[in-house]
Image (cartoon, rainbow, N blue to C red; front, side, top):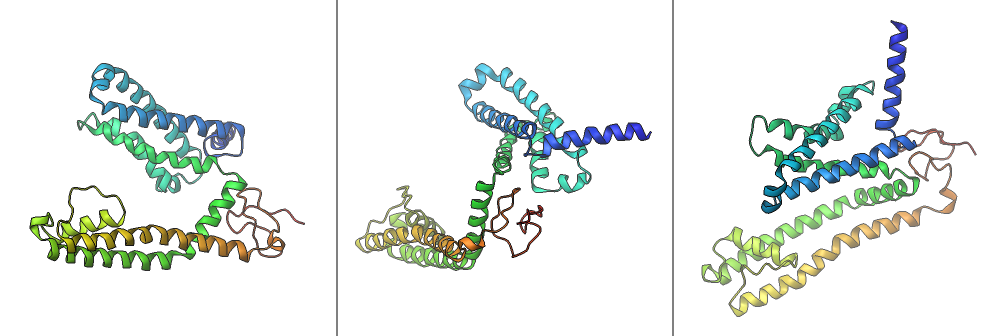
Length: 279
C-alpha cells in the first residue's frame, strides 16, 4: 500500500507542476495551450450567434464545443486532485470560474440555449496574468495596485461628486426641456446627462431650447474634466511612489514575484513569501 501511495503522490506532484506551475517549460506550455483553447471556445460561442454561419456549420460548432468542454473538465479534475487542499481551490475565484466554464454544455441536456453561457469562459483569460508572472510584469502590476489603493479615497469622493452632478443636471434639464424635448422623466434626463458627460453622445435625446443647449454645452465641457481627473489622481500616486523609492531601497529583489522593495534584513518576500537571497 505504501508503494502505491508513493507512486500516486509522485504522479500528483508531476501533475501539480504542470497544471499549477508557471516556472517550468511544461507548466508554461500547458497554460499557453489552455489560453488558446479558451480563445477558440469564446470565438466559437460568438460565431454561433451569427445566424448564417451557425446554420451552415452548426454540427461542427457543437462538436468542437463538446471537445473543448471535455478537455476543460479533465483539466478541472486534475487541478482538484493535484493539490493537498482541493476545497481551497474549488471555492477560490479561479476555481469557481473554472467550474462555471464547464457547466453550460452539460446544462444543455436540461435547458435549451444554456450553451450561450459558455461565454463566461472569457473570464478564464485572466490566467494570462499568471503566465506573465515575470519579475518585470509583477513589479509593474504591484506598483499600479499600490497607486490604485492609495488613490481609492479620492476616486470614491470624485465618483460621489459625479453622481450628485448627474442628478442635479438631469433634474434641471427635465424642468427646462420637459416632455416636449424628449426629457420625459428625471431618470431619462439623468441617462442623457451620463451620456453627455462621458462624451458618448448617442443623439437619441437632445435639447431644443436655447437654455437647455447652453446647459448641455456646460455639461460637455465638464465631461472632459471628469474623464481626466481619475487618470490624473492615479498618475500622481504612481509618481509619488516612484519618488519615495530611491536606489538605496533596491535590496534583495524577489526572484519569484519581482518585488524589489523589502525591509532591511528581510529574509522572505513581503508579497509572495519567497525566500530572499542574502547579500
